[in-house]
Length: 329
Image (cartoon, rainbow, N blue to C red):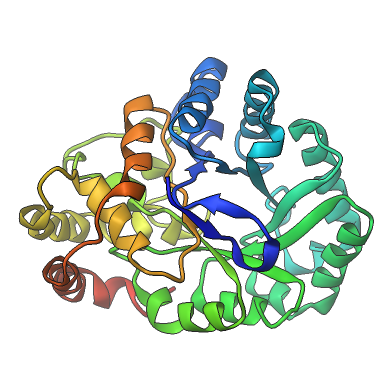
């Protein structure tokens, strides 16, 4: 497994990590043992970067990670990033303050079983929060108190990422970037490299579209966000199928099938495409299927995609995706 520096944090992490939203909820039912087994499989595959959040199953994901780290006795060998803020109700910018964030951080410290959280990311706060210096002062205070070692942001929009990294304490940005969400490469990555910001890529497979295994008539469980958040009814629409209308997504996938290299699946091609951008520190696909976790990890050792494949991806993006997505996020 190849490794990359996570910005200025000093963490040297595997370039393929594990996202654990799938473990915690909004993807159908997942048992405690299935959650633990996903983490075990990731560790066995060489992955040492785990991303979670306090709202993933109301702490379910954080707890399963802690259990496996203790079971394997590998806490010093694994970097765990969590997120805070989405527990706010109402979820408004002014409530991203020291009192609330301290409470959330303390809860995550308990659930992850650690005195100091390695990396805490503000969890897609409202845009106005990025214009509140007191929010970032609160994170700095928590760092001074030893409750967290490093902090960053998880964003919905490129402009939020660019604003966030104006604050000197922000060391990482988690952002949606995939074959259907290409704008970060045009507007953000160069500045992130210049400022030595760690870039964590989420939703790399566009909620499963880029696996090539979904069908147009597929029905998802009621508690799967691909059922209940198609139009952004619960959270930002861009988190579900990368914000792309599903039919357009399937049209783009159909165009891409013939360009999948030999000995790669479409999912692996999608992950390799992301890693071909050297501003990316790590990509965090999520799955509770052990075979999928292993296949994702294997991408690190695969050759970069050819210029021809990159060109085909851009062609599909411009034909099927650009108008619906490019200027929205």
